[in-house]
Length: 117
Length: 114
Image (cartoon, rainbow over all chains, first blue to last red; front, side, top):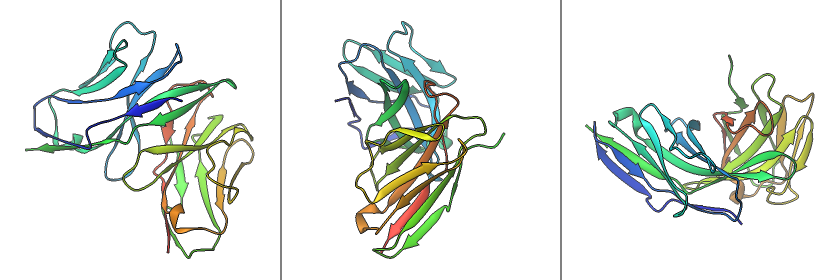
């Protein structure tokens, strides 16, 4: 069975500094996808970034980048130049591709990030 | 355009009562997903709809949980004879097609069973 592990329940970072949120995964599939979502206190899940297992380059979206190390089965999220608005829960997720041709997301337990001024 | 909407935003009920949670996906999205987020936990998959059919109900925790989708749009998640362990945030997501990577989430319904 697929599994996502986020070992950091909480992280602190100073405003304008970079922070790395850890994510490791376990799967026997050759084709898979990895996601990061942000969940602010309002509760909505906001899609941040996606990395496909066959993508050779690390995904980047503005201040977000995904440090994908396939052999180590890790997909860490790097947030550069942290802002106060980055304070939120961050979830790593894996796409479990089902035979019927759809995606089911498997989520980690999350990391709560607090950005200090 | 409008995003995924869910109602009610909050629901408090007594143990043993039935509840209905509603999800309005983004217009034109054929795939719809329900997830549950218990306190301090990540999300767990409940059920997936493609159009009106539910090919995957594997995540439903018990037979007290059921869901339907009509007209390929609105979905209702029903929990019968609610228990305290059903207290959680229930999130709905939709995607344009079933194979799409990005799922767009609604704001969730916070269910509290007393």
